[in-house]
Image 1: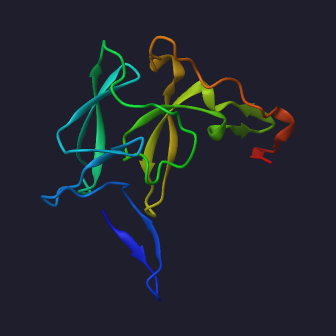
Image 2: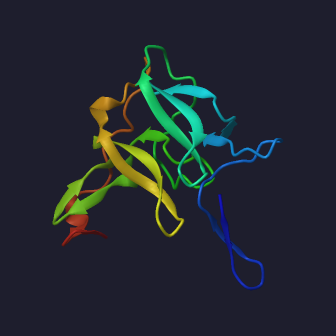
Length: 159
């Protein structure tokens, strides 16, 4: 994990959104909760294990399909994952993830999004799978249709 500090000491960002354990190890975040290295959680029908990626940063590794209910909160990709989720975590899409292809609106609820760290150290959600690969717990549903329409798409840009 690294932090970018500019002159004057202002902190601009962190590459991983992880907390450090008492033993100095990088822990993982899921919906703002800290989980220790090696711990597994169940979410959306999948097991995820907290580990370390090739850069030495905390990362959620998706494992086998799980049969039980989710063991962690799954608010959906409703805001930037920074400070809430470690890379590798997945969430069902929401209107926050809407985007345009040409003049066509693609609603965020159509996909599952994964928290990713970019080469410049920033973190965001990236479409990783169709929503059919996320299992909602009993009584839980998708986040509903977007309030946006294709009229907000201008040559691939969401206005």
